[in-house]
Length: 170
Image (cartoon, rainbow, N blue to C red):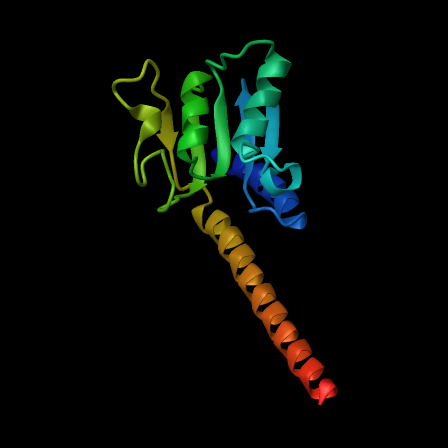
C-alpha cells in the first residue's frame, strides 16, 4: 500500500472528527502494511486535551501489539504532530511519521520545531511530509471557514434577537 492510500484512510478518520465538531485530524498506525491503530481528534467530545488523533491511534496500536514500543510502526496523520504528540511518538519509538499538511502554528515535526528528530533525544523518527497535502490542508481550512461562518450567523441572530427584544419592550 502506498503513502497516498494510508493518507486517504486517515482523511476518512478526519471526517469522523469533523462530523462531531472536532478539528478534522485523523491518524493511522501501520506495521507491516497492516493497520494496528487509528484515531481522530476527540478532545472536545471527551473533555480531554490529550485526545488527539495520534494519541488515540498510538494507544490503540500499543494495546493491539502488546507493547508500548512500536519500533517498526509508521504513523500516518493528516496534520503535522504538535509537541505533545511528537513527544509521544518519540517515546513510543515510531519509525516513521508521514503527515499531510504542515502546521505553522504548533508543528513539532519540522515546521516550528523538530522534536521528533532532536539529536539529544534517545530516538529520532524519519519524517515524510506533504502527502496529499492539499486535501489535508483544505479539509482543515474548510472546517475553520465553516466554524467562522457559524459564529458569524450566531452573532447576527443574537443581535437580531436583542434588537427585537428591545423593540417589543417599547
